[in-house]
Every structure is written in structure tokens, then in C-alpha cells.
Length: 103
Image (tube, rainbow, N blue to C red):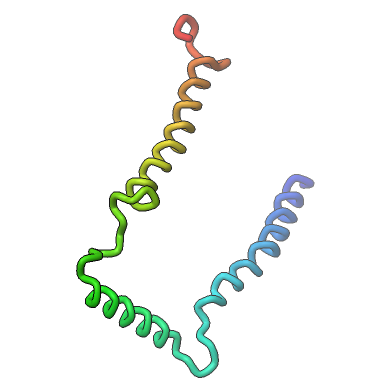
């Protein structure tokens, strides 16, 4: 009986902590007074089209070969996730439950 009360209390506390963050996360989409919210999006998209048509030599705007572009992000994520995976592989070969004679 005590374990059930602990689980219920933990659920209530967790919901009390999560609810304010959920309402704050949706506040960024509420338009300001007198605006529909689509006005800013329309202005930004028109500005992007204007800049792209004035500078056709710049391409799509995605820096494919820049260090801070797509390949830079690819190298960074490969290094991070590869390091984590290799750490798991090394630890997995020398564990308590590793098969005898193989590690």
C-alpha cells in the first residue's frame, strides 16, 4: 500500500513540474496584439526570396563544404557518436557478463 502511494505522489509532483513548462512553450506562438502571426512569416519569406533573386551566385544558402556547414556537422556528429559507440564496445568486451574465454 505504501509503494502505491509513493508512485501516485511522484506522478502528482511530476505533473505539477511539467505543466508550467508546457504552457510556456506554446507562448512563443501567440501573436502580439493586432497581429495575426502570419505577417512576420510572410515578410521573412518575401525578404528571403528577394535576397536570393538579387544574389544568384550564392546558391541555396546551405554551405555544403564549409567547416560549419553540412560536412562540419557530419564530422562532429560522427566523432561524438562514434566515440560513444566505441566506448560501449570496449566496455562490453570486458564486463562481468562477457563470455568466458573471449574477453
